[in-house]
Length: 393
Ligand code: PLP
Image (tube, rainbow, N blue to C red; front, side):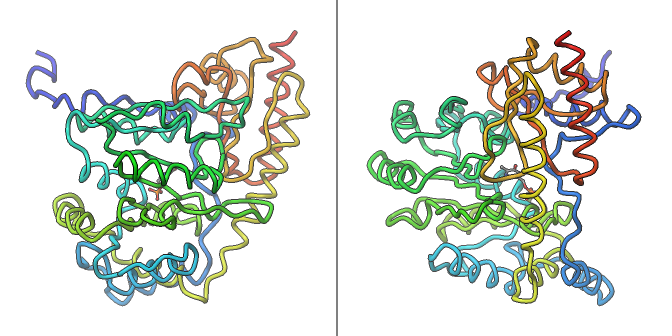
């Protein structure tokens, strides 16, 4: 008898595919001397005062459960941050929930909103979790494929073309993982009008909003008239303050939605870890200046962009935000999956193949996360150049 016949696994879990970035990451960790550019996990430490706040919370015994929605002080700080950055007013008591990373905020939002049979529009390439969770809940992901030749820009017209009466939710991710594309204000405005006309909700994942480079900014769809009522905004500490392992994120949504998410929170994790919540309060205070994180990634972005574009056969478009690059490998003559595994085995550089983020239309791309220090990034670029030279011979 195999394990399966002893203990039946639920279909909603079996239908979830193993994560390709994790598969490459796991293989990379069995090999020596790999430069790992797979996961979006910054190598920088959080600002010192934030680390100190976490330690202090532990030493002072602030290590018990909090309210399901999170510490009131933290929710107040999140609401104030949204007011300052997005120009919207948020009630910290009823419109905010603190979660275990933006990942849990995203899961909880989809879990709370979706019923079997609903359609959820997701623009591709996409962060893999959305489609996995949507499928697991018996809903149907419907993809809008953005094109490399259009700089992976989502258009309202392409989105409108896939709407049906079953469309319950549209997921927006701007700036986008894996492309770094930012949805322009004009497109957001059109999507906001469509949402109201066609009556769908929007889940806006803005976790990379703090990593927009070259002095540019972006707007949130939640700040357009009529959108706060039909949007869930997701953000968190991971990328803005380099706090991935603290596992702290949040959602801002209408009070009835937050009430349901908070009820479910009790049944999933009860609350986000308390020391992380105290660190979060410190992170959002005036005492913290995280600008060094954006500056560092902007510098690494330049190193990677210039390095990749100097390699014959590889091309990389400008990267306006995030710490990911979608690199066009069509000049190699290999398909992305083959490229990734050969490059890992032959020159020990780990990346992720493009189709992992939305299927065959991204077969000419690999994703590189430039979360390594400059020196290591330069080693990766040299090795990638060696690999390209070898396969082009
Ligand atoms: N949303 C997107 C688009 C991401 O890329 C990630 C992580 O890589 C997350 C959410 C999750 O972030 P967190 O660490 O806050 O759970």
